[in-house]
Amino acid sequence: MNENDKLLRLQSKLKYIFNDTKLLKMALTHKSYAYEQANPTYDMYNERIEFLGDAILEHIISDLLFAQKPEMAEGEMTKKRAAIVCEASLSSAFKRIGGQEYIYLGKCEQNSNGKLKDAIVADAFEATLGAIYLDGGYDIARDICLELLDKEIKTVLNGGTLNTDYKTQLQEILQRHGNVKIEYILQKEEGPEHDKSFTIDLFFNGTKIGEGTGKSKKQAEQEAAHQAILNGGENLGN
Image 1 (cartoon, rainbow, N blue to C red):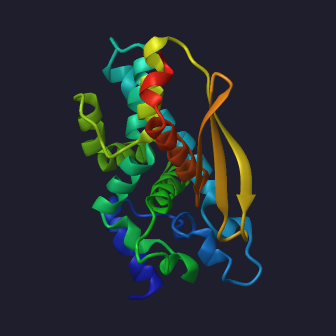
Image 2: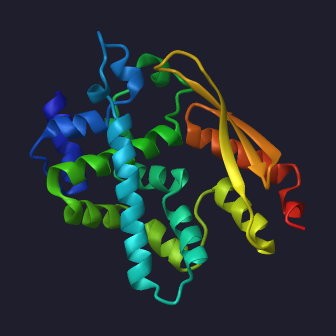
Image 3: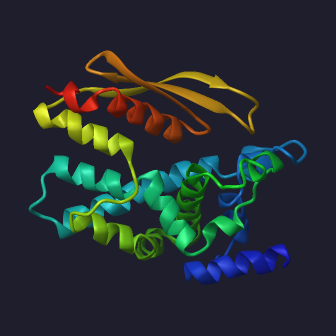
C-alpha cells in the first residue's frame, strides 16, 4: 500500500478527508522516524501539533461537561475531564479505529518489545485532532473527537472507570481531606533526541512521595503516581 492509500484509509476511518494531507502525515510521525531522516525539523514530526491538539481536546471536553452537567462542581468536572483525556483513554479510542497501524515509527520504537506504547498512540490521537482543527476548524474537530471518545465519555459520565490512570486515582485519594498541592517536577532528561528518557519527581504539599521514569513525561508522571500509591498513598491525606 502506498502512502497516499494509507493516509486515505485512515481518513475514511476518521470520517474526514483532509484538504492538506501533509498535516495528517505530520500528526502521525513520531520523532524517532523523523530523526532517521536527514536534517529533521520540527515540522517533520508531531510534537508541536500534539501540543495544540492537547489544548483543543481539553477545550472540547470542558465544553461538553459544562453544557451537559450543570449540576457538576468545578472539582468534579476536573476529575471527569482528567479521566476522559488520560493516556489510556486516548490510546484505547485511537486503537479502536486501528489508528496505531498508521503511525510512522523509527526502527528503535518498532523494535521496542514488539508493542507500541500507549503514550505514543495517545500523542498521535492528540496530534491528529490538532491536524483536523488546523485543516477543518473547531466544529469539525469537536464532532470527530466526541465520536471517537464516545465510549470513554459515556463510561466516565455514568460513574464507571476506564483503564488505570494513576494520576487521577492519587489526586482523588489526596483531595479527600481538602485542598492539596500536587506537583510533578521534571528532574532528569536523558538519551538522544529521538529516544529520550524522562524522570519525574512527585511532591505532595512540598514532600516528595514518588518518582517515575518513562519515554514520555506523561508516562513518567503516571509511574510516579503509581509509586506513590504503592508506597501508602491511601494514608497520605490522613
